[in-house]
Picture 1 (spheres, helix red, strand yellow):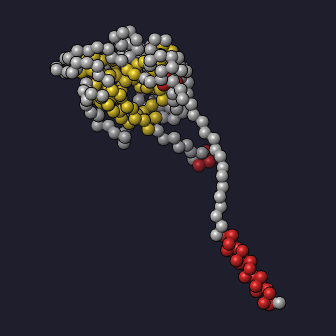
Picture 2 (picture 1 turned 120 degrees about the vertical axis):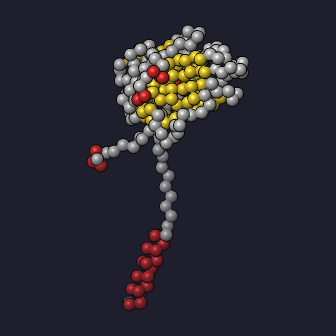
Length: 239
């Protein structure tokens, strides 16, 4: 009997050891969702303000409606000549519809032909030159060939949390209607002054400073905006 009991105990130990060395395989499924929308309806979106020389918004897309069609945004400045400076104080606006603040850290201008004559500012008042505003209400972010000291570790401008509604900016105080010629949303509200860290939008001033001997012809490129946000939330019981 003693021998049998000992063998039984050894057998149980072997079973336990084999269980601890087993590999577990699990398959599970999780869903996801996102929507491809017109740039005027995105959570971080662009709205028109100034008209270009053809009396269509500087900011525009090729065609379509606010739910379909050509979705690539462009800014069209018209024709300029050497030794000419052309400025749009509100070429377009950037609006945050996220439910948390979003920082604009820096921008970058890429030229297709290497000729960069562009100056870019973020600022408060769409009706005046950024250079005449108070320092707290403006940020010179690009200067004819290079960034103005900003990088992904800086904050040029902070957009306050939005309300998720593409029909307005700054809460509900300014409507952003649909433009049937430029195919973008826009506002004509000249009283919409952006406050850094308080408003959910900012105005983008773009100047073309054309030097003597500038290359004649069509100039194209892209403007890249860099955004950063802290999306972590704190539960009430953790606060």
